[in-house]
Image (cartoon, rainbow, N blue to C red; front, top):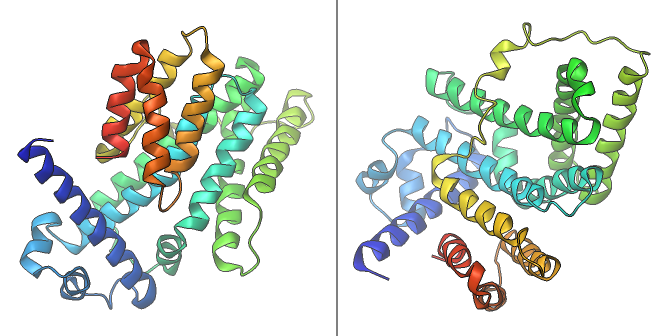
Length: 300
């Protein structure tokens, strides 16, 4: 690794440490009662150094939202790349891994639920818009895969109701001491979507929402929408899965890559396991380039 690459890694590690410390403090004390000096002290850096990473407290809170929302959503993104899973199973598993992430990042979720964050601003509204756009884009893609284009007239009602169900269960998971099982919840939500979709398709219910009415929510739904710091990671994941789907021994390498995905989702992935699995990918000559790029993103 070159000197410049070492500097970049150290910078990313420090940035991550700041985000994690800020989440803990804001989750415990609230946004308005947490100062930038307190955050700097908890990380062991000067306030000036903290401002070199985040010019303002608003920029810090936005980066927290982006970082943790992306960590949760990347789980669903990677599961969605496994083309061997049937659409129904894949959709349920995508919900499952997101709920697993929500449980893992409880401190962030509790911070968000407190409601004590930066005042509404153009930056915050833009970030929220992008998050919603990505959620709706993901939901739309899965609905089309499950039901085909015939579901399009009902997609907005289904997406809006699904968003509400998803948000309600997320709140319950964070506030309740009795944890819901993410796998059961994933299947439960997809089952409810299926009931609603079949009701629409059978003509028992009529849609209330359409493209014109929901135009403000459809902007930007034509791209994956990964936040900047994760774009390279998602491209690396996608490149590996796309190459695997062209191989004769696809099933074997899918199992290896899915195992890497499972390990990488842990709060403290086992480095020995990760490097061993990645080595298996790199042994395949046609996968070597993609595997190396993935390794660089997952284990800098």
